Image (cartoon, rainbow, N blue to C red; front, side, top):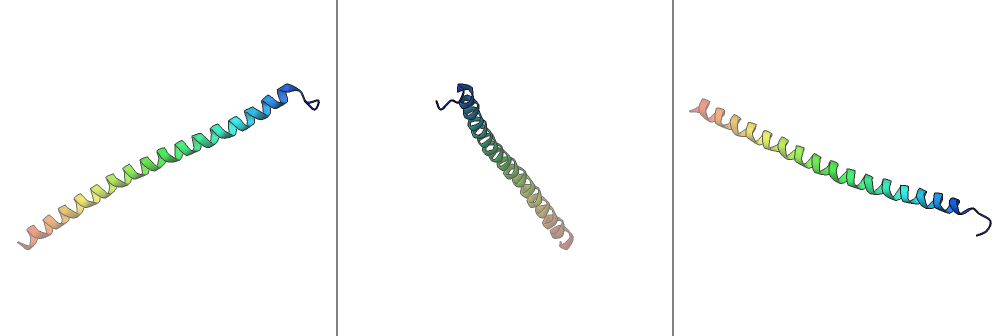
Length: 64
């Protein structure tokens, strides 16, 4: 084909395949990171809610 060795086509195909795999991995890591961020955020909000409830209980005890 046009005087180009066959292995050149294989190298070009592997470059495209490598790009596809890099893109796929990047998307999977982004999804995993988002899940981690959401989980950590939920833990943080739960802790803040507990602290708020404890402050309200202490405030009620002091005012009683």
